Length: 388
Image (cartoon, rainbow, N blue to C red):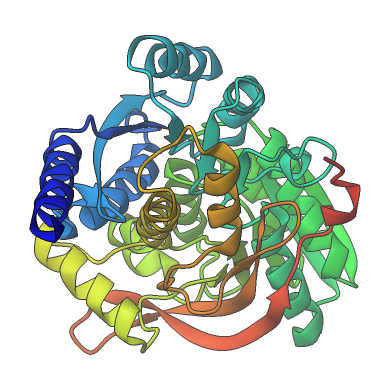
């Protein structure tokens, strides 16, 4: 009798294993910017995420995953169309990937209201951290203000008393400037907002030269930053007025700009030279697969994949267990390449922030060298507004 029962149990286990092997993969929809001059930001997010998938044979947390990727071209309406397709046609249960806040504001509120999870590897505007927080929204990068808060604190500690501000006129631009001003205690020489995607900064550079500031704070992501740094150098200002910006000189931008970026101060929650086993392994694997040094955006895509994997493992891939999946996300039970990481009650990171400086290595290449830690276990300024 015992043998009969044991045999029946083994039979059921065999059937379960067979069904598991043939189970439909969890579909994750990635909406990101892959075209325009800012397209490398989306490439980095996608490639970091894909690396985590490849290292686990197409699975996250032991659960098979199908990654769907769509290019929003930095256009809100296109982002909405892709999200609709992923949800209604492809039945994606998790969305991720958005790089720019104008797209995020158009897409994310509708997604989370449909009880779909959105896990952000980049865009973290103040609305989502405060009054617009949602139980199904998680940000794995930072609240948009945070990197600029680190720059503002650094500028105060350096004793700068007259800083010129330059940022694009959209949500993330306003949030970053607010973050800088929250911790910078000196005077503002000027606060100038440019067009999103602007390529020519001749007028702005002429104005800041005339203003004679003792430093310039700039938030110009992607191709905007490349153009600004090149034109700043062509105007003969490199080395004469200190430049500071949040995540301003990632490794892809350094390759495009060259020596015009030397000396620029930038902030980050991650750096390629973090000497931890997880980061060393990530950097080596990324370089081997893609033939280039990862940026902080790639590290965020990689961490996003591992966060999702930790939660998928907790529910054995069953996303009908939404409360259990959400609880597992909140625990952030994964090893981040940035080091210590946990979520605040608004599902935004509480983490350390650093400033780095662009230096030239002996071989002539450029890199970001860690200067100092500015904040420890830093939380965003909007968490108190989050009521769910």
